[in-house]
Length: 297
Image 1 (cartoon, rainbow, N blue to C red):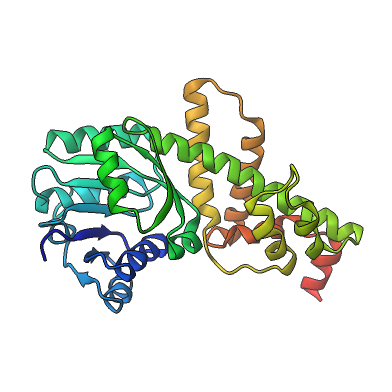
Image 2: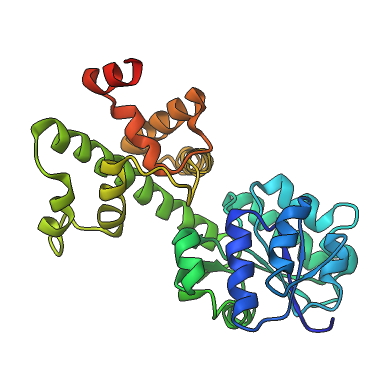
């Protein structure tokens, strides 16, 4: 297939992005180490590739949706990686959430091989990908970002060029600090409301439009109250992002005491075996004596 979009990484987030692209008419070739994840997209109309190199061959753009910088590097520059199959000038769009320094190194190595690089991490998760309403923050040259924005137009409602390579990832870290603190604040407020006997279900409407309102309040307070732990994200992914934010804070000598507390709560839940759960499982941190007694009854 010629001039298709290649997708490397079809996990929860990559799968949602791939599904949206196929459903909106984009020719997609997908590679993932998990055949079942590939099969789910093939069932929608994508074409499977045996390697990342095969997926990248003839592609107008290669989208990466992977979990760590080392995996991104291996997928692009390792054996049978993207760089082996991509033609000169191919645009690589990294939608993974990795640290800015790693991104700058990857972009430089890609340029040395005649490839172009845009970091385009996202906010909005699986629900927003499904409706084409993701928020993307992007780093790279103006021309490369403009092309990336055209490729991703069907999955995103808000795309912003933040600066050179790595600027998108830096912005994503800021996004994750704000999200992490907000998730924790809303979970804590839910626990207080429950303990005080207030009808939690009425709080999002009561606060709508006020200064305490947020998308997280509206979506997650009802889920926190219902202990609705269906997975649209992972606590251990938040740990990864908050770790990276703290690394950047140390590098820039920035004090971030609230982020440190938030990161520790997420680490505690991960250590307790809840790393693979959605942010809704933050309520497990706020179990009081009555809830604990119910669990052991």
